[in-house]
Amino acid sequence: MLFCTRRNPNASTKESSSLSPIVSTVFYIPSLSNSHHFKIVKEECETFFKEINSAEYKKKLETEPIQYLIKIGYGSHRAQGVFLLDDNQTSYVQRQYNNGELCGDNNRSLIAQTYVTNPLLLDFDNKFDFRIYMLVASTNPLIMFYHDGFLRVSLHPYDKFSNDRSTHLTNTHLSKATFADVKKSNKTLNNMNEKQLRDYQMWTLERLEEYLLKSKKINDPNWLNNYLRPKFKEAFIHILRMTAHAFWNQSNVFEMFGLDFMLDEDLNLWFIECNSSPQLVGTNEYKTNFLIKMLQDIYEIQYSLYKSRMSRVVKLIKQMELEGLIEGTINYTKWRPEYIEASKNRFEPQFNLSSDNSFHLIMDLNRKKSEAYFGNLKDECII
Image (cartoon, rainbow, N blue to C red):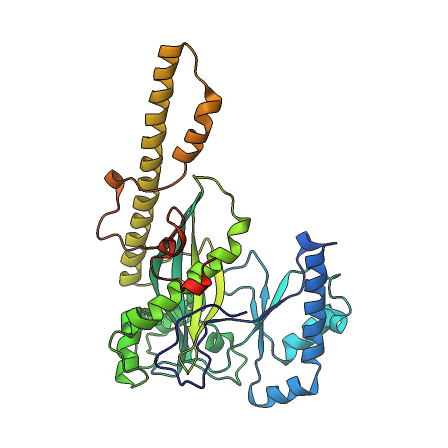
């Protein structure tokens, strides 16, 4: 599955220019039992076990010993449900599924996700990923905002032959033990004390751009705005369009998601996963202020939509009351379509957002065709 995307101007023409979602195999989803989709999931599970038992796969392991991550399908956060598919985990999964014969019968919800074996590394050979925020401000109609996030940097050098999760995973929760260790021992790591480590563990997008320019990995001084942010925004739109059919279509529904991405050494961007109810913890002063401002801006967006919606509904109710006074009765059947339209979400001019709101509107289906995506989606991707 490929997204319609911009080409990476810094990547070799021989490299893939598409944003790639990590290829995943789902082992079991209870709600799909006895359905066509369940059959597909069962077949994917069986194909996975055929692969990990193949001679070709075992040959890959000689140079790239981690080819997959195993993830708990839902209800897991802070890297608690993520495991490297090393020798021990492979043996465990093979036993649990009787080497594939129990695909579809074992009721654990697991995902086997392809591991990116050539991640872009930072100055201490640290691996990192991006946590970027999506606000689905409305499902009636779909209105979505983009918000810059930050890099989550592993505090330990990347070693593809290591079984230590802290070298492979970048979740902030995994860094807490290192913070505590350095503080308790009153020592440093890479010449950084606890406070400096907390600052290093979270990079801004601007800091990454500066690092890539200095290290000659990019040459465009506006790489963030010309490549990376457009990539994120385009991915957001595709992800939302693929999943919107499952949303509850009601005007008071909204949610913020944390989306995780990573870059490989060729600067190809990979989508890893989307997290509902992402944890918001200020691990340093900058991040604390960042999150406070973001939450304040979410409140402004939702309150502005609410005030816009209610101003239209109140105006309509007054018109209905006037009809009742004049006619002696109210024709509710006549007013119903107007009420449905008035209660849909859209911003009224008097409730526009403040200029310093940190969210960026990137999708609004009140608009028609390409205008709904504010230039963030190619015409050939618009149906």
